[in-house]
Image: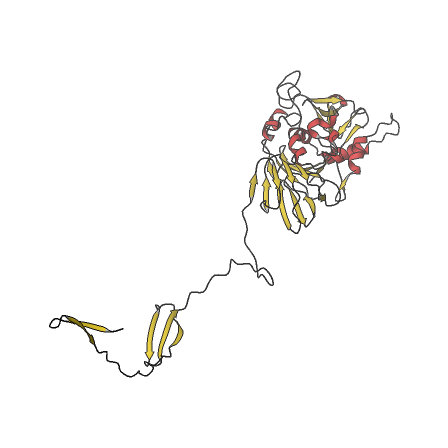
Length: 398
């Protein structure tokens, strides 16, 4: 390529000579060195340049970070360390289905249908469900089985444990305990350590603590004893201070009462209404007397009821027929006692709320006229011949 210039004097373009020199030497390539240093956490990032033109250096200073908190991280393998803490629970008040995506902990507060679904293959999980109401129904998926082979009886505050592994599930119910409950009538009830019944605390002028045995230990069609007066047993009248025989003092025929319907009757009210019919003797004392009667020269009706009660032992101690004031409290708390009782579903004809389907339950107290004193299912104190066979609910005074 040529360079031209225009010359006015001649009116033409002329070449301009191009000057060129010799090739120069190669320039220097710098050897740059980078380094990094850790600074204190209180310092800021900084960059320091140094070295020569041919060998420059660059040093980058980076502050040390604060220590990361790994307390909330659980290792997937090896020693996981000491784990502690708790989790929130799922509270259900209606029908519920349990599966692998459910909360690990659930409480069902009402009588509900609880369905447990099959899990997926190659998965494992465990769920626990606290069942507050014993009338709930548990239905397992096809791949599930009950531990022990049979579906258990639910009790209040039972715990259902469901474990799934690959293609099978095992379920187990741990029997619950209601704990101490104060009834609307002010009496305290709770399960006995023996598992044979429910303790009822009340006051009939003195503080009492009585174990009321479960349905499986009750019986029907037992005679109280021999006809005639037992001088050692307290004789009580069958009417209250209102002049009638109904436990609540209200005269209604037909009666509107049923076992458990008068749970709101307090001990103070009962003691006032039945002030003339409180047995001065204990259930144990009366049962001892009933067992001591010799029937050699009589019609052969000894105290089948007392013999039966004493044949049932709790921690080696024989049980008794309740005296009349204890039986009245049992009548008042019949529904709650049934709720505590894990055996009522197996012995439904011996439920207290149905008064054992026996029309009358014996007490160990004697009525006027040398009759035995009992309570009819419609809440009426009633004296009858001791040779007649009625129901009995064994108790143990604690």
